[in-house]
Length: 307
Image (cartoon, rainbow, N blue to C red; front, side, top):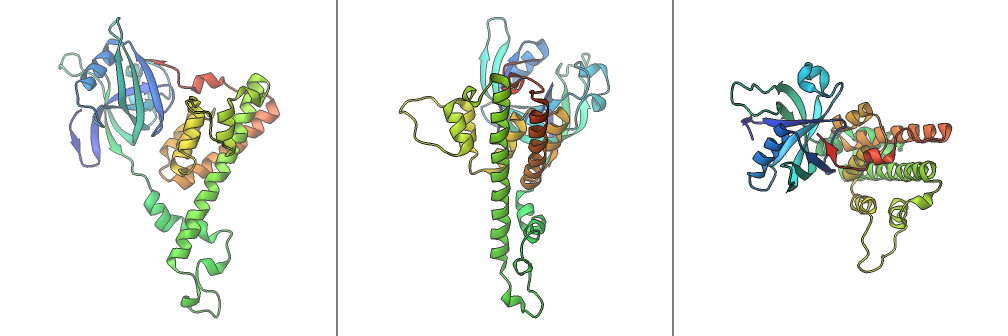
């Protein structure tokens, strides 16, 4: 929807109280007339990536139009691609969307009721590119050089370049270090989820067995026809996907909006996982020091969100 130029687009905007992340499911209950119109317009489009709107987290206040949008909203958001639209008898909708592409707000377009424009917010955005390829080819060579013998990054004194490893060896080290980092974050996340369960329900027994198995990696084939817990399914899906794991942790951990925004704004998986490792260690320390969960897990469990 809306005009676009290379790398930029004008998209409908849907402010929420918390950011959305790529690949994360977002159920919503739509009841405001302006957003009913938005969903109706998107529903008229063919199924696919164009059925999207931008989700941005609110920095302050709930009526964004009453203050300067630049002050009310964070500047990095994520598109939500509609996957399911279910009309309700009262004229509203229940919808399910999935996080798509990240973007940066360039300008927020307020609705003008006298111009015939849509009644909902729109925004000019620029798309943010993931840095996976560049990260592996260049930036992560620093990680390969940290904590490894000099021979892995170049010839030592008195050695010819031919004696040192080739580019393939350095690339393997870089990839291996990313796998180690993802494994570290997965282990921290497992401890974190278990600690939250203990403090909310008195023991890890509050977690479904398949969730515990997925967290620890100690999985066995379940009974035929048994329905897997959604958390366990998500963990299994990202078990070998560092990028997917980073978005799962960002969306599921009980972090502040500012922490979540920092993770959303980070374009490199390695740096995102490194930040998550620090955040999870901090949260584990707080959990064990204070002996309490700062906010209810249910707040981040994906309930239908009023708009």
